[in-house]
Structures are given as structure tokens and as C-alpha cells.
Image 1 (cartoon, rainbow, N blue to C red):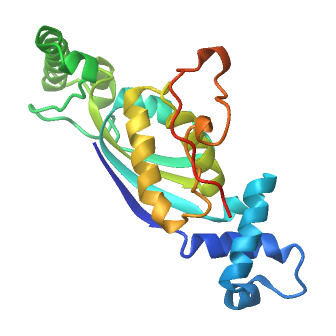
Image 2: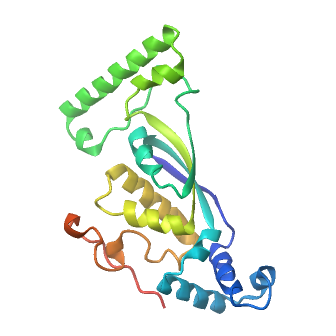
Length: 227
């Protein structure tokens, strides 16, 4: 798995504070961008994050490149609809004789299970190659490829959706692969907006678990409080 932050809105915390402050300012956003002091930015951000008025967070976006993950994972990822995606196409990309399959940790720790799993993936891929060699179009032959097939995807989310994504997918109840992706994305984004992302992640970092009866019972350490 390789997760990289390709780019993000410059000075994200200043951009968010300016957008929020504009609602009550007699001057324009461009002037606010230049004139707002760091203390003013922190004060506005604190109001936003403690009040839950998150519309200003939507003015900042992040774009990530995610490689070496399974199709099973990206099927979960694209359910987060307030985002933009471009994924390697199995319709237009014909795969070689050396495919990569993602192996779940539970199978990776069991040699017998791992061998059987990879054999099944290999058999499916062999059928795919045979179909391609017989002249079947890749867009039809791809029906034979397993969910374990390695893929690549580019994802763009605004800050508001990122916080929602981190809450759901950094949770220990999320499946291991998308949890690893979400945790990596949070690690990359955190230095760019440390005040906003201070308590980002599973809901148990901020208060009671929101999973109710489905709670894992093993909460993360609480995040530090905002000053």
C-alpha cells in the first residue's frame, strides 16, 4: 500500500478562517487573507470546531494518490460520495502475466490458507488471460478478475468530508485495508492543518463511541483538547 498526498489548498487553516470570518466582516476575503493575524485565525477556528458550523471547511480540499490496494477496498471507498475519484480502468488496461493480489492479514498468517487463496486468484487470472488471448475484449474479460486484484486510485475530498471519512474509517470496526488507508491519509494531512485535525479520527477520540451496541470496546486514547 502506498498513500501519498499529491496536493492541497495552500494555507488550509487560514483559508477556512477567512471564509468563516467573511460572513461578519465589512471587507472582502482577499483583504482578510492578508490581514488576519494568527491569533484571529485560531480564535475563528476554535469557534468553528466547537460549534459544529462546518460549512467553511468545504473551501479546502486534499488530493491523495492511493496505490497497491484491492478492488474490494475501493468499492468501499467510493461509497463516500462527497468526493471525486479516478481509478485505474480494468476496461482499458490489460493486465500482464504477473498480477498483484492483496492478501488479507488473516490469510497471510496461515500458510495453507494463503496458498489456497493465491491459487484461487491465480486460477481466475489465468481464465482472464485465456479470454484475452481468445480475443475477448478486456471490458468483458475483466468480469473474471477477483476483488483481490491490485488497483490504483486518486481521491479528492474537502476538509468536511475528510473529517467524516476519518471518523468512520479510522474506527477499529472498519475493515483493515480501508482503515490503513484512512490512517495514512490522516497522518499526511495532519501537519497541514494541525488545529482542525487535532481530534480527527474515530469518534471515541472525542467522546463516547457512536457505534452503540456494535462498539469494539477498545477505544483509542482521547485526543488533547483544543485551547
